[in-house]
Image (tube, rainbow, N blue to C red; front, side, top):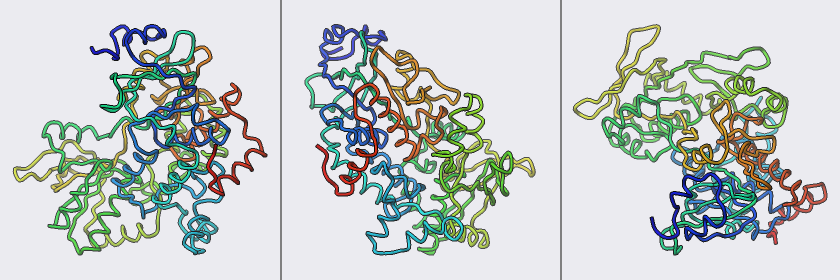
Length: 505
């Protein structure tokens, strides 16, 4: 152990005295509020707090990312949503604008001098698909707001190691700065309030694919849609090939669209085998008032959640429900879905007619590899004999991993911080997104984003969900005297400053 590093006593103590940290040679810096993560979750909170009058000198964002949109932009790009493509989000869900006005549709109409976005919003979803913004517009608007609120003054680069309770109240957040930027290996920020917005711990692979990758050390032919896999499309442009796609959500539909776009654009001979574990044949749901459309294997839903989950009847129902009932509701409304977009539907129809897209309902038993390197997917089905599908590549589109033990900070919080998991296996939080069990004197630890799923608010992992959490956290902090309220007068004056792009003091 070196000077300025964690000692065995610190590692095994759940509550740290000031002297214990200082005796380890770790520099301590006082900061009223610290946000851990540095993604859009952190950004939305500090944006709301800046609008409510908190100075940049009172907050720090700890992150390994250079920008709040860096991880989001990376994930959208590798999952086939580059800057010019449209994401799965509502027109009024703006991370840069807590008022949601003007919406993305209005801004796009203004910038492009076109009424088309407005007409689409006015006629959705009866005469047109739901409007959604381009990925590049989200990035541009967040950058504009980051500049306006002085985000870069609050950003501190480094890897957060842990958050521990402080004797007497508050917390120590331990940061490992980038090499060469600090005379000690660790520094500690002492604060009354800590906010966690750490996103997903990592990639989620299906068990059989994970086992195959580890056994064969195969990373080229078996890929996750959330990791760089442009080489798959490059190879398919060079020679005909077969791709097995697994998954039935928005990412699977985007990967299929990319494969189909390339086939049509370059005159390729790509064959696609699409494996569905559950094949949806039509509308489905527990009763008449809770059904979603479906067909051809897919469950269709415009957004990740029904709109009522963001601010309607479903939101109220979820808030009042017991933990067990919340788990039941989440399974019904938050399943694997994708938007039913007209252009993509036409592509799918042509692909089925041309017999080069092959949807199959089956359960995968295992993956094998031929001497030439090609992959063999062995499946079984209740209605037919087992099948084998030989392919050049397998693309896993099943999502991101959200298990807390996979994340060092969350795991430490469960072991030493008093936090506890809810019925969904995520952090149990209260009505203001305070982490239950992690309170410490006058200190409060808050959390938002994917780590808080399964509590009183359903749509936490979305733009509107992160803003809802930020507003609720800010209300709680206002009650504690940390920031000002957001009444009509302040809200209007701050919106006028936002519209004029006036930098906040």
